Image (tube, rainbow, N blue to C red):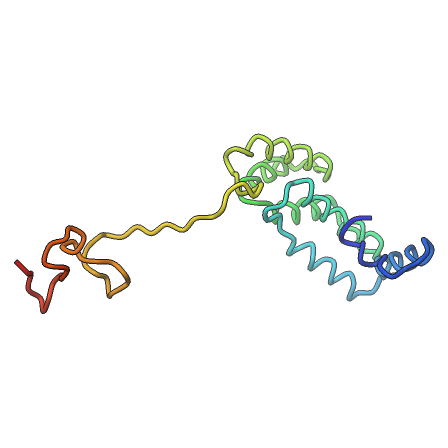
Length: 171
């Protein structure tokens, strides 16, 4: 069972109980369920997931929509999948679909996984190998409102630890 539906099996003691729980939860054909599933699909994002993990989540939603009586066309599936990809993979997916030929999720998966493999060294964040870093670049002039920066005299040790006072430089 996938992680997305594993919670439906909790507390069930027989395979028949598990099957009944899963099929009733995923087999609902109500309008509200269809809208909920479509909303989940539209807001699905790859984030730091691999292509395989991302497309596994896509597969669960596609199957759930089929069971709910609202199957998506290949074009809709490709559109939602492409929309949720990380930026470095979107261009490839867009170029694959620009030809007008229908692309199956399986074909898209093959191309994206190959491209992800090629990019692995260029985008280490995709695999959680690096942490984000925030850098600050300033002009280096004055104290900037007392935000922890010292004047240039203080950096050089001049002026007995005092910077500018009352608009006049210390000598």
